[in-house]
Length: 129
Image (cartoon, rainbow, N blue to C red):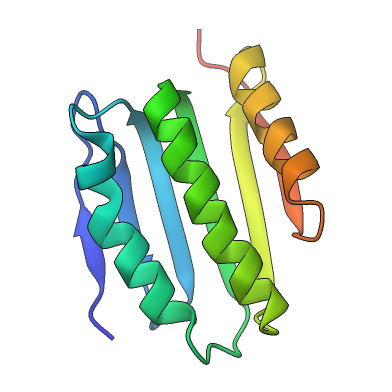
């Protein structure tokens, strides 16, 4: 399966979707102008990738900021993760947040609550001052 790498911009995250290492990394900020269009190929890739996936997959999400439309899209992405889990894919999801960023932590906690069947780790990192 083709890998996807998207470089970060001032309003969109770096995204690495790597089927050969079974890692998914989403890092940075998320408030692209057309959020739904920006994430559309990511959602298609994830849906195709998880079809028949039996290997363990590690997902690292480190977003210091996301707007409300990004939150909606990530809810849809977590639904893809949940469906993969229900189809016996082993997932480890690391929600990485700066310890000084209460909002990022709260968003991670919302995903833990909304997707309780998933193994979501809330991982604090020390803030850079």
